[in-house]
Image (cartoon, rainbow, N blue to C red; front, top):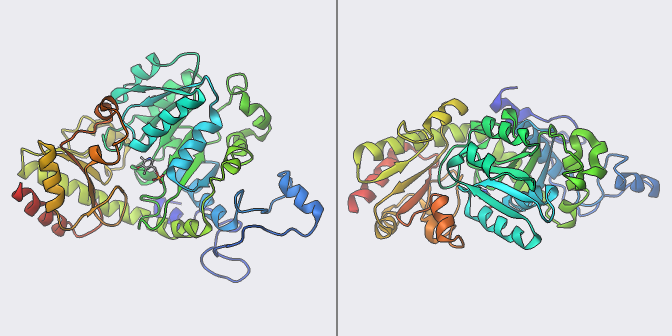
Length: 413
Ligand SMILES: *Cc1c(COP(=O)(O)O)cnc(C)c1O
């Protein structure tokens, strides 16, 4: 199946294609905390992963499973675990692999919340080394005998640098390390990181997957291909018998259920509906973003536009190679000063001023004073967060309206 078809029909085996009992065309929302089994023996089997079935929604639920299956098809993995938020998904993905004394080598150009999370992990003896500009050689240099994960975002938020996933995966695998990719900003519409060698992909599905910004959620999808060396990853020992499902089995039988990170069935349902139009929305939002970036760059030379779709972007070459002729729907504008950045945001009438991306509507924010507020000056600099920078998450409005609103706002500066 091609991309848009898979969003509508992918993963329809089992519970997904609607409801086999009633013919409903969408999976019913199963609002039940617990699921009854016919006998004590059967319940025992379910608890021991020896029979299919559900027992308790914190561990699994039919509506959530339907969403997970579609995400697995979308990213081309073997299994997915849906979590209450993107941050819960990132924490669970890291903690499922790491233990005290382990180290992460990460791109410095990360979402502010992820930088905060990696700092929180230090209290548990897990340290992170940051690498600037997606420099693969620098990733290798920062690697030592304690390194257990490489981490990067496909498109850094809000640095908008593009990771060469194939090269970074090869570098990781040379050292026996898995590559974890946050694909939130790019989405599978631009690239499927697992198909380029990444081992685990995390999406904050609160953004483009949900599409309408009506709920928070996150998903971890495993490629099933990484060969866990149980000397280096002792926590995997017990789960090695699950083969390609080792990572997911460890997660679902451990941290995921013990941290209570489960998604609400209602939110899983919203995501199933929202993601049906992911391809259509991304096409429109990406072409709007390109048109807006080109227009501002051409018309207002004092404003510095950062967008991987512009030929002068440092990341244009890899973006062209890795993406299908679309470059994402986020761009940033450097206005010259913090005052100008604030004035621009205040003068815009159409975009919503919110700390979000991936809505159908155009959104703007000043990251330095908001989402990166807990970062140090050094962390902000290396993440590409400056005090004159405005981030725009371009929506699916008519481009004429977006351009005319930015025109009137920039003219006021
Ligand atoms: C929003 C975001 C997250 C966090 O996701 P939540 O669903 O808000 O918890 C993680 N990574 C990136 C790149 C994001 O944009």
